[in-house]
Image 1 (cartoon, rainbow, N blue to C red):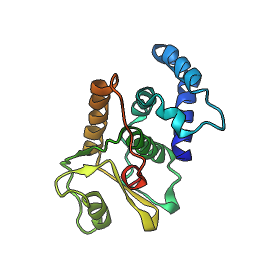
Image 2: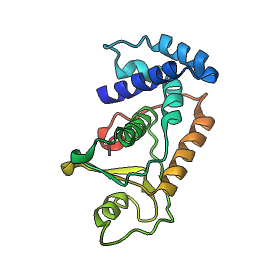
Image 3: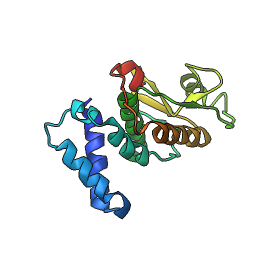
Length: 174
């Protein structure tokens, strides 16, 4: 959960640093509401999950990486997006999937195929984790776009409702 807190804190402060006019009032209000310090707990973010989700969803972007492993986690942008999705899953209890038009190379991408299609045979998550290898397999870009759109639609529909998360690490991490 400390990773999720860090993601939320850095996301909020990156908006403050950029000074995006249309979000300034909401950002200042969110930062004040959370009273973010080094001792901030995830429970404090759960008090206003809709507002935290607003920032996390705005962070989501399509990434070009197809695989990030323990040895090549140098691409912080891809890991940031994955961690934002993990935070969203934990805060909302939602996990989205999409179909893809991408044609996988069954020989070169066999591990990616296996992990992305592990839960369903006709749709895939944004990423899938191979725990014993500390390795993330990332969906093709068309599926990523569809999943980001699902998060945006979900937020628009649910931003004024009570949001319940899922603390089960097997749900939000993998």
